[in-house]
Length: 355
Image (cartoon, rainbow, N blue to C red; front, side, top):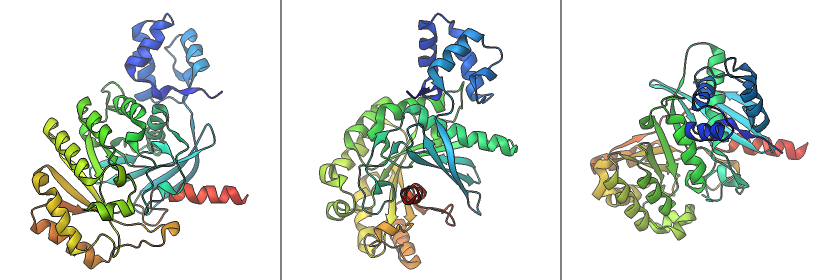
C-alpha cells in the first residue's frame, strides 16, 4: 500500500498527528522547517529530529510520491515536467519564467470530466483526484530543480490551471493552498496564487466564503449560452447567468479582481459580435475584472479548432478596450514544446500503449 505524501499535511494537521502519538508540538515545526526551508529529500536527513520521530514519519509518509518521467525545456526557459504518481498515473506540471519571478502551473486531477471540446486535458476522463500532498509536491519538485541549478531562484507564483477542474477536488485544493501560503513554510503570498475554474457555481460560493485571499480566474471562452454550451458542456448545468450571479457574490465579499479567461478559436468565438456580447455581459462588473485573451494551442484530437488569426485577436482586443473592459493578450510560454495543457501526458500514454 502506498504511503501518504508528507506534503499533504498542513502545519496544524502535522502538529495534531504528532501530538496524538506522544510528540511535542515543537517537533512538528522542526519537521516543517526541514521540509520547506531546508528542503530535505528524506526523513533521515532531519538531523535534529529524534530517531523515534524519524522512524514514525518513515513508517507512515513519503517525500517522493512523484517521479520525473519527462522534462521538456523551451527556448524561453519554460519547463514542462511529466510526473508519474505512485499508482502509475501521469500528470503535468509547468514552470514558467517571467520578469516578476518564477511561476508554476499545477495539476489537480488525473484526467478531467469537464469535457471542454477544445482542451487536451479532457481527452481522458478523470480517474481520480490528486491528494493535497501530490499537488504540493509538484511545487516542491520544481523548487528542488531550481535549487539544483544553484542560482538562488524560488517559486514565487502559482497558478492552479493544469489538468483537471480544481473546484471538483475542493477539499484537497484548500489544503494545498493553506500549505503553500503558510508563512512558516513555502510562504508564497496568497496574492501571487490564482485558482482557475470552469464555473462550478456552488463551489464558487463556497470558495468565496472561505475568504482565502488568493485570486480567482474563470474559464469563460464564450459570451452567450448557445456558444458556451457547444464548446463547454458544463454550461448545460451551470449557465452563464447563474455563473455571473456567483461572480457578483464573490466580488461583493472579496476586494479582489477576477480574471476572465477567453481562448480565441478561429471562426468560433473570435468575431467582433462575440467581443461586443462579452463587453455587454461584463458591463456591470468591468471595473472589478480583466479579460485574459489566450491564443489557442491546436490539439491533434480537436482538429475542428484552429488558432485565431492575428487580425481577429487584435480586433477582439480593440473592441473590448473601446468598451472600457480591461484586457490583455496573454504572453505565450513554451511554444516550441508540447504547449497545450495535457499534450505531453497524452503523447506519453500513446507511446506506452504502443510498447
